[in-house]
Length: 135
Figure 1 (cartoon, rainbow, N blue to C red):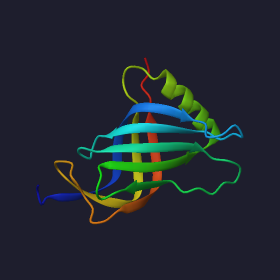
Figure 2 (tube, rainbow, N blue to C red):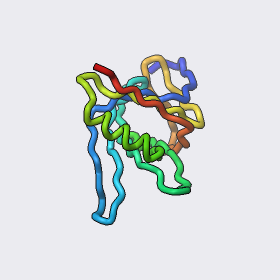
Figure 3 (spheres, rainbow, N blue to C red):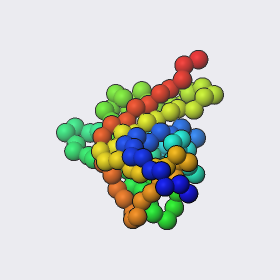
Figure 4 (cartoon, helix red, strand yellow):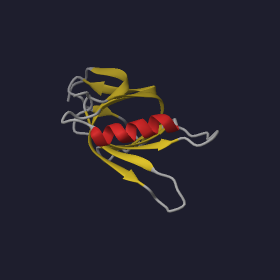
């Protein structure tokens, strides 16, 4: 491992698989995206994307365990964006969907992509961008 650490507040990932979860007949649904991390070595992320409901106050968070290389994230997006994302993920071409999550706080990562955290961490997500390839 190297001692050359830099701070980053962005985590890049590519979607490997996507599922639509409908937990009940009463309604509600969310996308569950299994992603491979791009700028952090040997890592994955299970990202839940939920449509926001009327005046729902929901936090966008990323949880990073210290003992496993699998992050868990929850994002809440506007209903029209959720519908568009659901359609676009299903129609996605052979190139994967790219996601960049911007964190409220920075993380230490070295040039090899190793992430340094001393304990289990939850960080607020400030923003996220999605890139869907066009044919």
